[in-house]
Length: 384
Image 1 (spheres, rainbow, N blue to C red):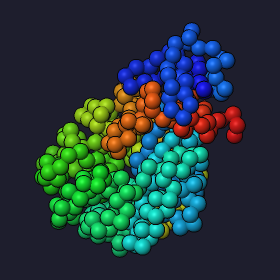
Image 2 (image 1 turned 180 degrees about the vertical axis):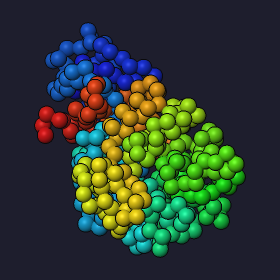
Image 3 (image 1 turned 120 degrees about the vertical axis):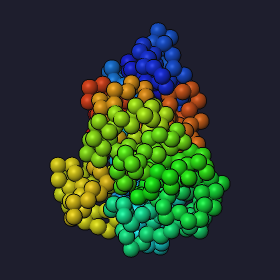
């Protein structure tokens, strides 16, 4: 048996002090301090007053530490798996870029091979961001490979793809939505110039969907043309990704989203690229040169190109900006993606019987002190 002692346990709806989290591969029990004896455990982590939170689940991440999901060398996902625990991420949905059909198929095959591997952040599957998006709001996606939504692209990898981003205005065959639902693939609306009516037609026709990085790569809200932003903020069927690096989304817009969507309607993501954890300099995204200065990643024409954000900082930023409680904000980076991906029975909260994915955060600046994945200590700041 292993244990984390002297931490502030961030549970679903409260912060608990004076308790010990005991675990092996799964969480065994949370017990009062007075019931615990050190001899009960073979491994002990002293949180020293830090926050003990469930591992973060990043459903939108292209890369970090010099690696990108689209890299063909076969080592990129392993590099990401080893680097992400230092940011509190214990599992992630590897996010592709719009490239040739062959290049995307290769990326999906590599993701398939990485799923289930232990010893680092776990790969849950793929987020297909493109090619089914609008040229008008393609962002850093390559225009030459954009395509109309076609489930035949996805079918060979239906076991791998967990999320697919779609611009509503390019969706001509509504059977695509049914095919996705039948295969438990979450449709996320984004990279879009769609009208409010076009968005609501899709929302009303199905169940839950996501909005890919709300506010970014979509028509801005206008009082006569509310568009995707207005539909996403108003509809309870739409859960909204937010990149809270304070660059992609202004703090006031973050607070507005929280006040309209509440705890259950927001999913915190990084949308990070290979330059994440690398510092300033020249980098790359989707075959395009990216220039990072003062932490801002942009294409040569100034277009924002993903982010260099890390999840522990995103969580802290949103906590400060939104006025939400810490349990609410932690849920947006753990419980909410777990629920929408159908994984909440195993991931997303500190509950008995769930996989022991646990992060200890410094209570002042939220830097990661230790990360445990499936009961194994995979990151310890003191061992760096």
